[in-house]
Amino acid sequence: MSRSGQLEQIPSYEPKTGEGHGASSPVDMSSLTAGPGIRSVAEVVAIIGVAVAVFFGLEGLLILTETPEFVFPRPTAVVATLFNDFTTLYLPPLLETLRSFGFGFLIGSSIGLMLAAVITQRPFIEKIIAPYIIVMVTTPMIALVPFLMLQFGFGMTPRVIAVALASGPMVMINAATGFRRTDSAMIALARSYGASTFQIFRRIRFPLAMPMIVVGYMVGSIFGLLTAVGAEMVGGGMGLGNRLVYFSSLVRIPQFGASLSIVAALGVSLYVLFFLVGKRWASWES
Amino acid sequence: MSPGAELDAAPSSTNGSAPMANPKIEIRELTKIYESATEPVHALERITESVAEGEFVAIVGASGCGKTTLLWGMSGLHPITSGSVVLDGEPITRPVPDRIGMVFQDATLLPWRTLQSNIEFPFEIKKVTPDQDRIAELIEIAGLTGFEDAFPPELSGGMRQRASIVRALAQDPEVLLMDEPFGALDAFTRDEMNLLLLQLWEAAKKTVVFVTHSINEAVFLADRIWVLTPRPGRLARVYDVPFDRPRDLDLHYDPDFIQLTRDIKADVQGDTPEGAGA
Image 1 (cartoon, each protein chain N blue to C red):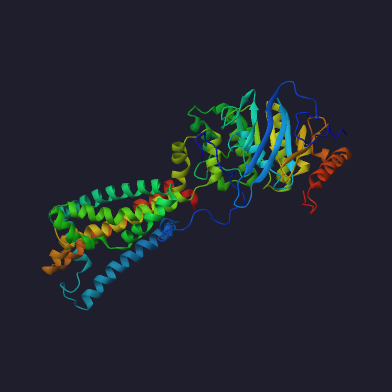
Image 2: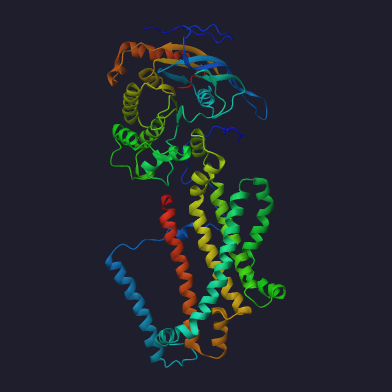
């Protein structure tokens, strides 16, 4: 693209084949943001009904089989400790996990997003960097935690770094897929109205990449949470991961179950959050 | 029926048609060469012509004759190899968003924006407040009232292309360059769009340059028709279209209309012995 806002090539306007533009990424999980919506009251009733049935069915099964509490906790016992001991036993670890996850994810995803936006502009650099990104995506970053603790001590730092390393490449690889799907016709349109390179990025390339960015954030956040909890289990801090190890070593199974439920709820919340973000900002694609 | 003055492709400024006193757009010796792996391709060779203020010019030719390249060269969006395009005395070397509006083959609406927001898009790029009265008026003329909040995938092909014309006209450009805007539409929708375009043009008297591969459409719409022939792309002939305005669809059955389309078709196919259907 020349300086004066001209285009070297006239876009081809051949009919697009299906969804066509943009290659799919190795970790294309766009189906994650395209779940079915809830339609009617009957559906809601059915969903809640099944949940209640599972809850009390499990409770009944455990009573009937006289399963001891240290083998499997009763759902009611888990709920009881969740309510009674929430502020003392669970809130501080929850906040600690949220802190290391939050910082790590914020840093990792921001760097990942920026790198994706910059690197896709330079295909040559992208080719060189791509293998390292794949390595970072596929390596479980929890494995780095003992090493990071040697470097940064027992504080929050090693966990924040691990979360950033786990979530950043995930965000990057998906966002890059989004940024790569340039639509030359749309860019020509913007150029014809005198758009600057930055305006084209902001008004065309970024919205075009948005669906894949949301997918990257969703997958990246779940990877980040996994790494945050895992890192706490490996060592350091008083977060939820640490509590899981602690309660199970003391065979306080209801408390273990309560901690696990909180971790699960966190994961689901992240999923729902980015699902809603996708619905609001990227629903034009489906 | 007047076939217009014949324009020799010979490199000279002895323009067969009457020289224009005050051309809106002047194309001088425009040449475009694409460098390809094997040999340079002469897409356009020394095109010299003018468009008068308020004139409706259609460019026709077989595929690959360079008509789209010529239009894009005129828009300033696509660099030309040599020669010049002059708008009111000023050479065009880059897009001139305040004076030239483009309508593309594909409606090119942004799918994440509503119809209204798509029409406001150029205002955002230019950082000016959208002229809501003008937009509303154009939306009404184009028959898009009630669809302002619809997203492009919810609209029909004809509606999308109408929206893209409204988007261009909302800028109130002096010149409208249209690159096969109705090529993807079915015959009925195309007739409807042609009528709408003539209605808008007669109301606003913009200068229009319209590229099409449909000779019928060109004769129906234009004041003058430029016929391009391929390899290398040359301006083979310029026709005057004598029919009175306003025109209606019955014009298609007028014997003179049919004769003129036949003549132009013969010209278009003249240099392509394989006989590419037009």
